[in-house]
Length: 254
Image 1 (cartoon, helix red, strand yellow):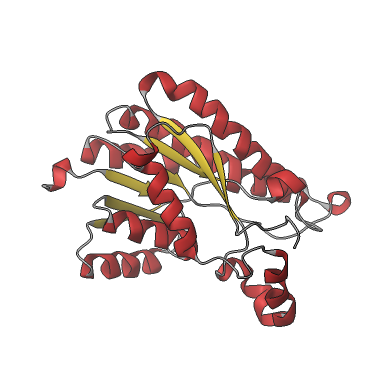
Image 2: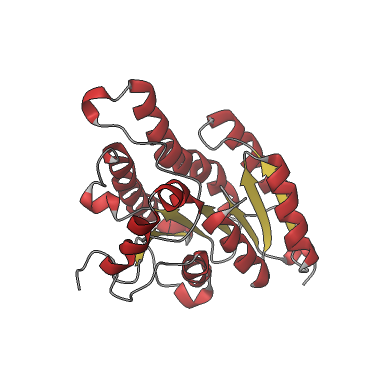
């Protein structure tokens, strides 16, 4: 496949954790992968790792919560490659913990921006290029917190992820006429730096989390990457507006 004919995947928040594994997996699937992040050094390092494996990869540094930066960079990517086949809205996060009574408006807006605005900005900018893609699709990331509203102090995180669940279905309705599919993954407890703090301060609590998972282990980034790989593929050509829980049966009790 010449570069110009290769499918193009854009993965936000791809310099570590799940995002990097998704980039790696889609690269192995034959995509040109465009990694986004805010740590340029890590971005360069990740691109080198992928390139060393024979994967065509590029890094674009921009903050997914900043409308102008997102639009400018997605347009740059779309114009350079003439298409986007898969947009993976992987960037997001907890942003910290705060109960509503003492929650600042700044914190509220930051968490909503990190999870919801980022998905909206990137999707909106990518749509004209997804229309030129082949079996094009968007993958969003929600969370079990979108259903159970999250643990103590994670209420606004849960709220933002419930909104991602809704915008996934709304985008699917909006884009169906163009043959663009929109789905979401909802990762359970995945063993990444997302949980670094609790892992280092309360390792026994972290280890106990697997007791609430039917399959008896924590997830690995590869577990999510393989589902994303399926969702963007032709094998999932008739799937849209779906959210797939990738959590080993988490929260169903044992």
